[in-house]
Length: 191
Image 1: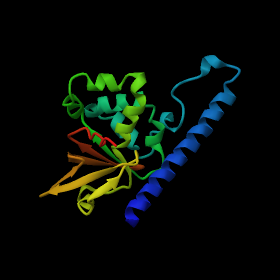
Image 2: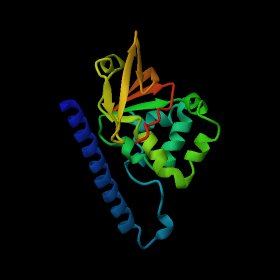
Image 3: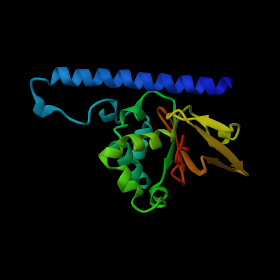
């Protein structure tokens, strides 16, 4: 019970920090460009700072992967780029393009529509949790508290770890956590 409370506290703190940082960046952008509106850009904040010297963060890893173009498009449609570059540590369960292709026809296209931004963000946040745990360490858990305030179940089958029914295919360490590549899009349970 204490672990669940700690994870929710960490997740809540992460989102408050994200909100505060996002508001600070928004305020700076609006103040400094108020006299020149033609310079306003949708792409502002930490996610868009170029840095070739650091270990890539979870967003940069996804952007650099040809197997995660659909995930990147979804993150951009939900405007969650800045949340994925914060200090973390973050664990991102990153569905492959094939995982998105396995959804019923039209699902991805429908979720990418602006009017479905909140539903898309909820699904994406269900793929993120605070922490930086290896696949083997995840075997010690029964569930994780996700960034959308819902729990995802963990099942161990031999050497395989399934998170929300998605099998971890591989893992990539990031500067702000870890990316676990998964073979399925995890859908949050209906409340």
